[in-house]
Length: 469
Picture 1 (cartoon, helix red, strand yellow):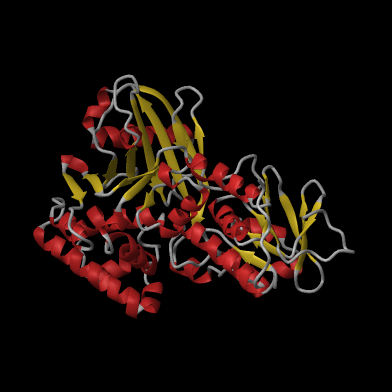
Picture 2: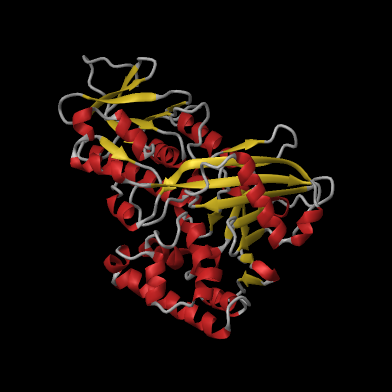
């Protein structure tokens, strides 16, 4: 691949991928393996897109920008990591265990047993003390109905919110507050009154009511960026491609034949190819398109996609305040607590406590100051875990992702496009592409695979590129 030379036709093996997150890199790896010559262009100084990590310069802890957790059902993500050689950096917690704390000191634990799926979830719900015996049976019945509706009446679910569906399934206020709403917010990043019931049904089917291993929480033993960015880049380069960070694409330039001819970078350089994948958020894609293309109905609808923010507050204390790895707060603004010392087996007074708090669907809070958000999180912590009042705050970091994910409301989900576009050689990837899943890492990787497959279908069989020795 080289700068534009109109006297030479681009090689059909050449693919330019704009965006270096999970979607772009997974597409690039799959195409590189198949013999394509891939160029990945990332605007930011480092790869990772909206799923990245960085190291605390003082204590060395790895800080996740949004506390991403993988699940055992992320089969396409695991295939991608195996391919680039980092699957062994994952730690599987085969028995899902979540401590839920409600105001007034009420506690309940969702802990799966060793029974085969989906009986493991039945046993977890039967032992969940925050629900009455009748509520537990009603939750199981609702889950069964939700899967049936997802399979035989998905169109109906696509028009319903989570809250409306749960009302139709006769779920009590307590069951919604203590089980369904926390599940929906954690997996969809949206308030139940807005979120699509169809997406929750798909999460329930894949993650909670399938094989026991599918519901496992999976953590990276290294920083999230180290899990996939460097390894993917190495794989692409070993297969004849290249990756360039800090290389912003300004325009997808049309060649007049209803195809993209080249990308024009912000520094004026141009790069041509036979195929292009845009693995960037919808707003960034629209900004790269010429005005006539952006007004095509296929692309114009992308401007209607809503976004949902996530706030992550990292707190370092002088001591541990809980033995649990993962805690849900019920009836508070703060929704989830991740105990990083337990997750990464770094217990001990020499480490102190390192907690990560997550607030999903945080539209009403995202414009508050960092100081206000820290005070809010600490107030919730002290109320839910009174022992934390004795701990001394050493430092804190607030991260706001104002455009963290596409909003999984019914209308936005309906508007999500597929990988193939009206432009013959332009394909889309990203967690916001229609994969049937909410905007997760697995959705991003699935979209990357879909875009790569679309390129293969367009080009047909090719001769492989020799790998570098």
